[in-house]
Length: 104
Image (cartoon, rainbow, N blue to C red; front, side, top):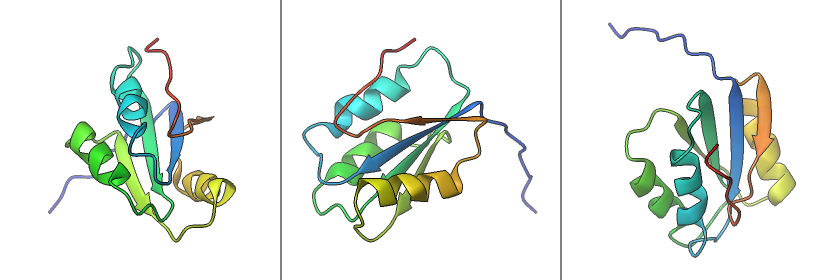
């Protein structure tokens, strides 16, 4: 029997990923380095064919705030919409995978 954990996330950060292996490390690391921890990060694999998702998964290890979803390539808006379908936060933030955010 598994325990049900009720965790409310204040923010859902949606990160669409498509062939950004040169940039994804800085993007994911900027989320890991946040001083505010009440968020979930939805990493949306938009049919990427490079090592982007593998790199992201190695960085986050078992951090439960990071959730990975895979979909057929449909473009940035399609990937964001996929993230919106799965987001549980009170607020939504969009972070492109070739960008990063300040740690506070």
